[in-house]
Length: 140
Image (cartoon, one colour):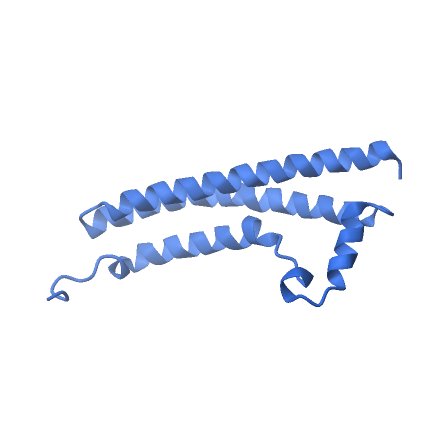
């Protein structure tokens, strides 16, 4: 492969990493602000309402994260197929490692797992708000 082809992949990978990072930060800020607002409410109904609004914002942001992660995975896999490219050499070297945390990839945590966990947590809080707001009469 020629140098220009490698540079295109590198610049596209860098661009996708930046997009993924920015969208992930936006997800964290949005969920944090909405959950903070929900915790400041005094009734279960207002708590549920704010969590539902948070879920409405979180799902589309998560979908954009899924898309960015899929594109980044595609680019990294394509780059690892290029002979003598640092991405492929690093991937092969880490695959031979005996260290558990190095051997197995954790690249999908930000793009897939955390958004799914966040959506699951918000859905749980909508259906079981008493985990945050105990039923009256249970405190001494």
